[in-house]
Image 1 (cartoon, rainbow, N blue to C red):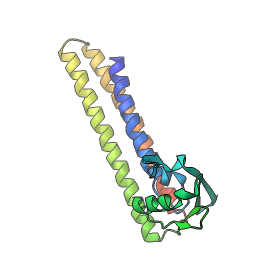
Image 2: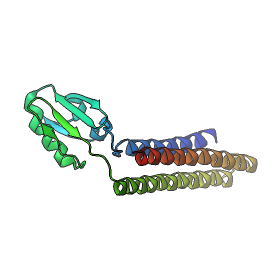
Image 3: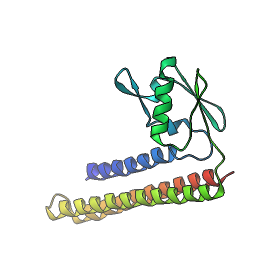
Image 4: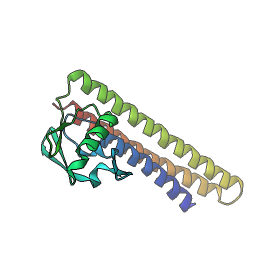
Amino acid sequence: MQEVVKQFEEKMEKSIAVLQEEYASVRAGRANPHLLDKIKIDYYGTPTPLQQVGNISVPEARIINIQPWEKSLLRDIERAINQADIGINPTNDGTCIRLVFPELTEERRKDLAKDIKKKGEETKVAIRNIRRDAVEKIKKMQKASEITEDDQKDGETRIQKITDKAIEKVDSMVENKTKEIMTV
């Protein structure tokens, strides 16, 4: 019984972790190096993450500097950033690549806030589905006489408490990210 509850709790935590990763890649008008996490460069025939071919820094609030360890990679990095379609054109000065983030318009901020809420809702639906699966599994265990009726009720209560905590966490993440985006 304990392991069943633990298993479903871990699934909920994974859903929240996925949401955190998605929120990290949302552009909030400030330079965030996590925006480049999914970009890969063709490095001697091997797709390599951008972080492994150069130094990424944030010298100012709205600028990301990418300084490759090999100058020959500048064009490849520039091409990869353009193909990633992150909405920013890289500038190549021959030694490094700069990404300058423009200020977000009010309309764009509202669109991002809607998107953030939508992703939060999708995560909450996933968490509720995990709860449903957990409750079904507990009921099956009780029907198969693997656990008592009291254990079933206790398990369902614990699953519900874990679900409530997970949903609270998602709500606070949505609220924080929305606040971050709406702040000029």
